Image (cartoon, rainbow, N blue to C red):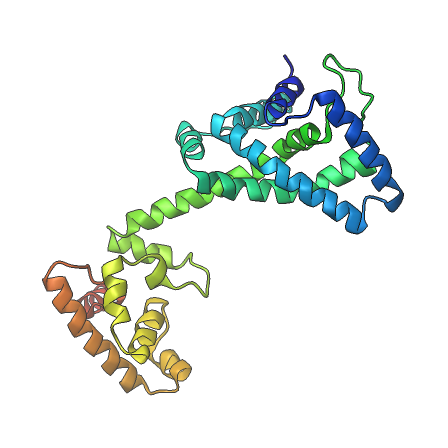
Length: 275
């Protein structure tokens, strides 16, 4: 059985209407949309329904692993390397949130190529004479979306690796600060990377102190922090010193680890080694 036949049968399992009836209805719909160049409000309504109705089908196929298997086979036949680890297969099987994260991205990409190839260029043919005959528009769309799955999956998998590194860094202060340089400029390090106990401790401080700590962790100098907060370098150092006392107390109780950039002894040691 060909990949197209497997896709068609999988889609048939989700749709109540017989395949022949769907194809006939889709042919009439395409004929109605063609005069408008597959644009405008009427086409947008059709596209909304297509995306909405394809969601549960993609969810089911991704959960069962069928979608992943067929997509990897497509790329293998095209000579393009593509591999989905067993760990990620299991995650996409068990997690609704992770599946939907990938599906939404796939759909947003697939709809553009679908309109151009299937409709504008006429690649979808209701008179197709293959072994199983023609397919409905939904089957064609699901099959087309597999070509977008590889790029979406690889980006998703890279993000999963980044999250794993972040989680590991929570147990390794040195790794934590190696990660800081890779954060987006406007990221909030204490919200993304610090343990919750540190966030709780910081949230209890005055707003000016929270700002000083955040900017210190982002690598700004005392003078730069003072300029941003319309304060003085001395006031910045005072606020950081007071927060350090709170921090050391929590550390002595083994509630948290102290970030190196806030640790006076750590900074002195770094300067000594540099000299």
